[in-house]
Amino acid sequence: MWKKILFGILMIPILASWPWSLATNPAKFKLETIFYPATTDETWFFSKKISLDTSLIKKFYYNKATIVKDRYFKNFLVLVDLNNYFFAMHPREDISGVDYRFKYPWWTIIFLVLGIRAAVKNKKYGWVWWITLLVMMILPFFKYMDGWDFILFFPISWLMILGVKEIL
Image (cartoon, rainbow, N blue to C red; front, top):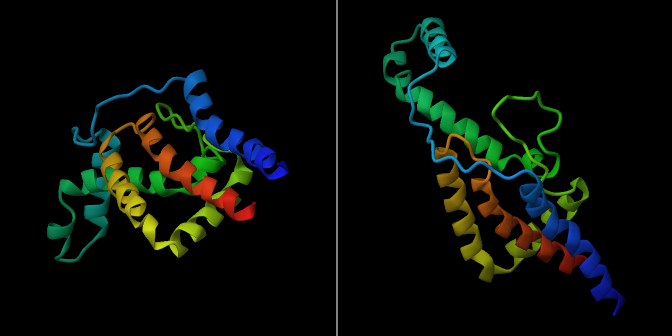
């Protein structure tokens, strides 16, 4: 009986924090992708990279696709950063136009680690890894991922629920 009560108490912050954050501060679902003309700063960094590199390979490596590749990897690294999910990207400078919302309380990272361990031990959960990986490869193509990253709420919360079950 007490295990069910404790399980319910631990599930409330896991299952309610990110949806509550979206309800209090609604996401702006924008369909803009990373394929837009280069900004002044990006062209300046691009020209700086070209001028600093003196090798012959720079003609092949540094091209206009480098700017789009850098945007993709920047978005991808934000998406896989645990700081994004448990600490709202703190301590990071405030970047205008980017909403780093509160997703999970910091102490629930313990349940995520335990859930990952439990899912790795159990081979029948392999399909969840592939779906999560596919989503994490597609989402960085959006210029603003706020709101779209809610798709990851389901696998992350599922892993946390497995972690809570491991403890109880």
